[in-house]
Image (cartoon, rainbow, N blue to C red):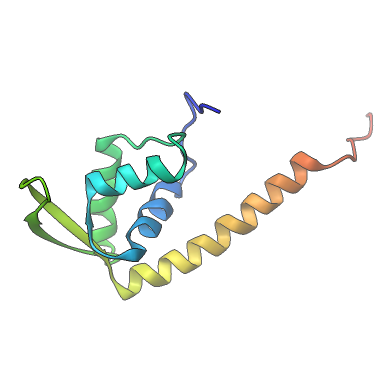
Length: 116
């Protein structure tokens, strides 16, 4: 199923990026590729949105970053979760799971709204 035109809900990008980085250090392109791959190409993150989110999370203390060289010999900024970032990931993941469960419950409901 293609999700063309679907926009990420507020806060979703941060959660996805934090989750992508829970396994270790990575650069932005690899984070975007991971998100695209694990969602079977249904979610594609625009570069501008991704790098804005990475910088915002670095300012909040959720990520540390340093310059390095990629496997393809390109200079890139590499990001890693901080302790605060791991805590934020746990917090946000709990909220999003509860939210998704509530939405699924509403979508699967057989009860209808009574007529007015």
